[in-house]
Image (cartoon, helix red, strand yellow):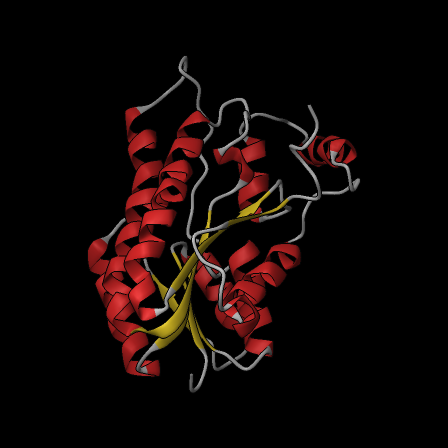
Length: 248
């Protein structure tokens, strides 16, 4: 491959932003998207000046078309696509809400799938596609059934997508973080706890490594999956959780 380039959806904060910084430091041309104006503004201030920061709603196929067009104009092609945009809206059967349900699937499933479909013409042969899933897709977390279903749908697609993309040697893999200290995690916890810091401390104590994940932990795995060292890895899920979920 020639110059390495990456588009990161949901790349203006948390895991996506850490991945943008990690890949930029490795010489990648980087483009990121974010939905919230304040997050996009902050990313433009904090990320390196040559990072392309675009505001886009992951639910909107029209926004996705615009992103693909702008990224194509900037880079010409992509060697990595990191599908990281996601939303977590905790709900149970007792308090479920149709609009919230639709939003979760629109971002986590529909948005991810169609971003891949629309970006496919930009992907170079031998490119890497990475999808953020999360351990909640395969482990029981109270109030997480809808988010788990939305991420689990993408996880279920990955083996088939890997075979569809294999003739062009395009790899697709999932990275599944455990609880990670990100703005989205703190917001989600805030819906169920009056003391987010205490809740996070308690969660850290339960982790085998004694801490929550950091965005940089996930970014390192993303960088590996994007690299030539992972050139023969496709259709897989890598869990990055410090051992969370292993105990019985």
